[in-house]
Amino acid sequence: MKFKGFVSSLSLLFLLGSGLLTFFVILSGARTTGVLDKFYWFEADTSGLPGAPDTTRWFNYHWCAYENGEIGSCSGKQADLPFSPRDNFGNSPDLPASFRDNRNTYYYLSRVGWAMLLIGLFFVVLALIPVLLSFFKVGVGAVLSTVSIWLALFFITLAACLYTACYVKGRNTFRDAGRSASMNTKMFAFLWTSVFLLLLSSFWSIILSVTIGVQKVKGANTYQPYEGTSSHDDSYNVDKHTYESGVNDNNRQNIKWWKLRYKKKDTVAV
Image (cartoon, rainbow, N blue to C red; front, side, top):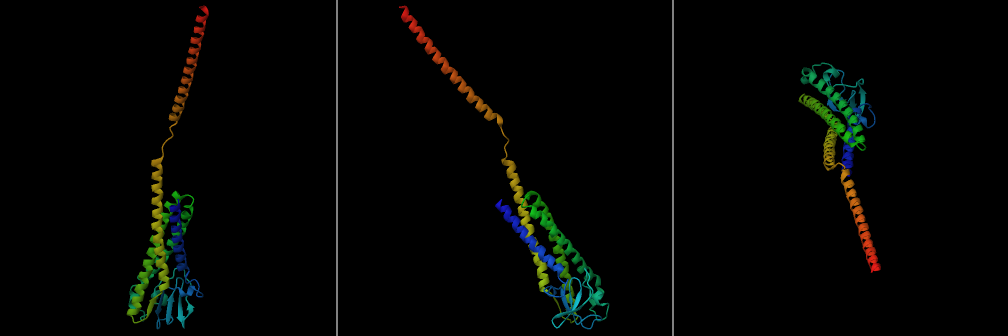
């Protein structure tokens, strides 16, 4: 029981950590003040592009101008804002050729990555319920949490791969055009740390499921049905032996008494 509790606690700890990091990644960019403005996906030199500031930062919900170390004017907020300079600033000749010719690549990599991130967070939340129930009903909770955790791992890992591929490709495109560009290390560190914690949680959940299965098999093998006849027969034999011994003792006493009486009669007759 102690080992199951230890494994359940570790799985829950890793799952909570992954869920918090994933939620923070999704929440980043909702505000342009405070801590959240430090977490963005991408920053690039967009000077000279029509409708673009000199330096642009891409967040989850909008892109913003970055000037003198502060966030400036931003675009309208959109829940699934794609990373696509062609869609963000228009199809201009000054735009690097890859953004104009391969618009769908950047557009769908970023949008599908956002969708996978939301689905992954949903399965993280779904996995928390069985893990909490596993402290009381371990057999049911362990199986359900294992399935949910592995699904969350799949979707969040897919989201991390899509986002990484999208922005690495965008960074290379800007640099090839002679423009500076960089990815936010903090944002991607949070995203990939979430994947790592989910991986640990999935391994611990498998260990928990295997442990429960082994204990069930051992419990089934050690179970023996109740044999009621043996105790009944033994008590019957003991009572029978006691009864017979008592009867034999009484017979011996009667025989001795009759023998003694017989001898007394013979003595009187003489």
